[in-house]
Image (cartoon, rainbow, N blue to C red; front, side, top):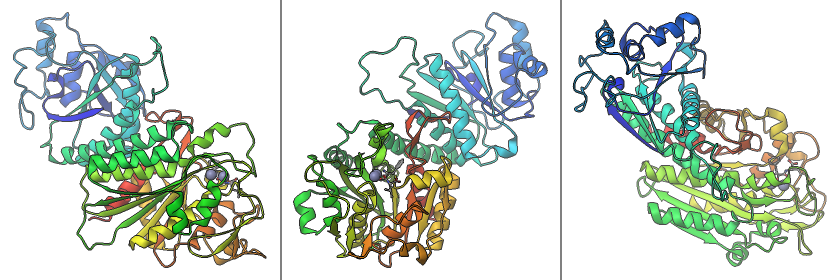
Length: 534
Ligand code: BES
Ligand code: ZN
Ligand code: ZN
């Protein structure tokens, strides 16, 4: 989807549908709302009086301009408060004479979207409201919509534009690669354009739009990769996608195959890959937007393209969802794309260890001992705890880039889902300030994360009697012992781990989501990276 900003009276912009967000208690007798009311022949005021529109979050009401009315509508339209080319409103060149009445300018439909209490109007609410508007537009099979952006809404003009853009672009994303026939009754796939209409000076809105568009596109890339099935989105496919990004955006890409992994002594990653015919890949993407000597930020994403559990096999029911076990890697690719698109002044390195976790005569077995790149030995108690094995070698490898900070994201444990449900990722690490930054970025992005402790006692649960550590720590505190395992491989680097097992995919409850992958934590990581620039 494309998003543009124009500075104009929203009711003079030709559009199949104009979205007007309507905070509770907003004054429909003045400004844009009064103009809209005049356009629809007083239906807005009547709807408010009848209680058909209360301003509740995501409530919608579709209104139609009264094109059949002549001069009386015009008289009404000139009533008090109508923005008639006064301060801040730029007259459209096309709009001469009565707008919309002729049918050649102005919106064909007006969609009121309740926005809740004005005090609650934050970026996440704006995403959900625009998501709802896009769902209505889809139902009408529209190809484009416009939306009024009021620069005076509480988050401020830039964040309003960013939130609205993200909500719409995320909501409009669809995955149709494997649909051979389009259902005629289904929603149109081609909502391709959003025009934000503001009457501010536009500068802040333009910036917010640009950020929102890049962040949502990055997230949509992650969602597309998540949606692709395991037989398509193989480790080789992820490496090809990384190469494509590198070519398109001038990034440096390095892909290690099994031979290079042997040379790097990545015994843990190779142990997981043994059970599969698919070649494992370790992808390193470098974006250098910062100064030459500046140490990069390291992002590591679990790219397990299908997790059967291995010899410690998972139950059949729901196993298809284990194609999403590469969600962390997908998000890292989304972040790299958006960072390059925004030309962020920062150096980034994205590392994605990618393999399948399958069973075969060669597969790693419970009780096997493997040697990691760090030299530490691991007793594999459960082959389904494979994420931490591949991340161990990836984190160790990431340190060769001398990162200022390392953040990994991984669908690592069912225990994270048990602890926090679908509402937050778990965040753990060795640096309180880094964890605080990630929590803030999570709040701003609508992709929340919540801390769990990482005390020494949890590490003790991993003690092995044959190797340096075991890959599982017993039934208790599963999300924490997984992080305690990873901590063994980050050395002194400030590091945090996001367990996204509960947040990476789901039923698509929010208006801007769909059933399947959510692209989490693409926006969280981008907000965090950007927060370090100022
Ligand atoms: N990929 C899974 C974690 C997962 C579970 C992701 C549910 C999404 C939803 C991971 O590799 C795994 O299987 N973890 C095990 C660890 C256990 C064996 C210690 C788990 O959580 O059950
Ligand atoms: Zn597993
Ligand atoms: Zn897994």
